[in-house]
Amino acid sequence: MQLSIIIPLLNEEESLKELHDWIVTVMQSNHFLYEIIFVDDGSTDTSWDIIKSISDANSNVKGIRFFKNYGKSQALHAGFKAANGEVIITMDADLQDSPEEIPELFQLIKTEGYDLISGWKKKRYDSVIAKNIPSKLFNWAARRTSGVKLHDFNCGLKAYKNQVIKNIKVSGEMHRYIPVLAKNAGFSNIGEKIVTHQARKYGKTKFGMERFINGFLDLITIWFVSKFGKRPMHLFGALGVLMFIIGFSFAMYLGIDKLFINTTGRLITDRPQFYISLTAMILGTQLFLAGFLGEIMVQSRTNETRYNISERVNL
Image (cartoon, rainbow, N blue to C red):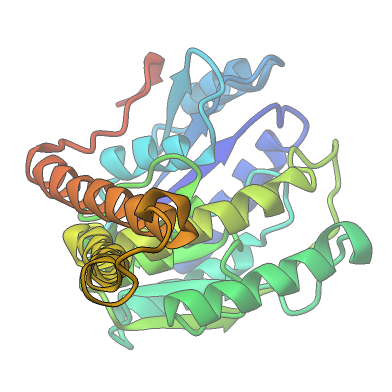
């Protein structure tokens, strides 16, 4: 199996047949051995019926259906687990990603030795205010935070070595940061290719402005996890010790001042430094304990991605 093409989808009944025919044309013209894995993320239209009919006509087409909408990350994770190809391609089901890009993406992985190639929609047909400007800000922040130099983290069209997708776990809404997850897993040869972006032909986008807010929050999460996920004591412990030293220093100052300098002055509890000292030492202790508990959790966590599949086709 040379290629596994994973297509997560939600209510894309109008585009599925056309997308399938387009992919098959590209596969046959390049003589690829392939499989197409549609992952229906809880569609409420006739998408699943169409997938089943396509699979009946083409044994290379497989399908996974969720009981409900779990999100794109969970859909990709299910597709990754089922994929058998040497090279895995992910793409969206809305016809905005062109299957004509697949052969070159395949060659970049197979002959150029890349672990991952991410598409870059340099010319976009989305709304400038609603998508383009927020996307540029998001990608700039992701580059600065992660150290992965990509222009378009959120492009659905990507190519991977099989080893990459079998060694990363995509959960929550972390599908935007698969290149970062791959880098953290040791796959550092990550490249980028300019790809064609097409105007949406059917329906409307399933994502609104909230995805960029969630994206920035996820970016903070993945930065923290990648930097301190395996060593939380390095952050919480260091902050805890610092806070405790600050509080203890204030306590020492108050004690020396009361015993040797201002022996007849006001009570220590009447001075604001006392409350600064007390608060800092309590916070320091709590932060240190948080780091200690974090270390215990790191050792025992299973970090499993969970979802329920209701049906499978040809798997």
